[in-house]
Image (cartoon, rainbow, N blue to C red; front, side, top):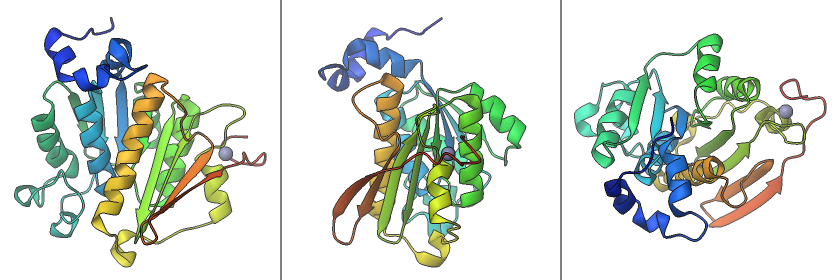
Amino acid sequence: MAKQLTNKQALRYNRQILLPNFDLDRQEILLNARALMIGVGGLGCACAQYLVASGVGSLTLVDDDNVDLSNLQRQVLHTEDTVGMNKCLSAKASLNKINSDCNITTIDHRMSRDEFLVEANNHDIIIDCTDNLATRNLVNEVSIKSNTPLVSGAAIRMEGQVSSFIPGKENACYECLSQRFGEQTLSCVESGILSPVVGIIGSMQALEAVKILTSLGDNLSSQLLLFDALSTEWNKFTISKNLQCKACS
Ligand SMILES: [Zn+2]
């Protein structure tokens, strides 16, 4: 049965409930929403804190990596005290302090395709905060098979990008995009990343997730939003569906 907001929660989320078109109804949708986050690095930390603060009821964190000292420059849920700890557990400790109402589950190993599919079927949205093409393509495949919307983000050097992929006949998927750009092997390890850039992109992913979950306004389905931090410019492009796409066509 769907959970209803308590009086205390209605006070807590009052500034959102006040928004035109948001109201108690959408806050209650968030309370019952289940988000699956793949990767709890820079993007994941920025995104998760806004999901949890905004009142998303359940969040599953997936990451098999441990916190390293060099992560602290941008992965803001991890702390000096949690260096060496699994990233899901480290993030969960911080997120619990932000909002103890959120039901946070952790998966500290690499999921098989089958396990991932089961998890996706138990969630309302997938948020891809990973940093490599192979995992991104798997996340996309699982999103399509489970018919679960996907919010995808990436950040490197002084650049970032955000897109949403809602499975459906007319809509492009992540591979429709990634096929065109080919293999991108760059990672933050070799290319560097300016700290606030991941925060901006992760926050945009949280915004997309909240809007998609609550059917609020327009989202970035079949659109690619690019951010150039050096020139402080945003650009938006349409991603056309590839009719020969292996993943969605
Ligand atoms: Zn596709």
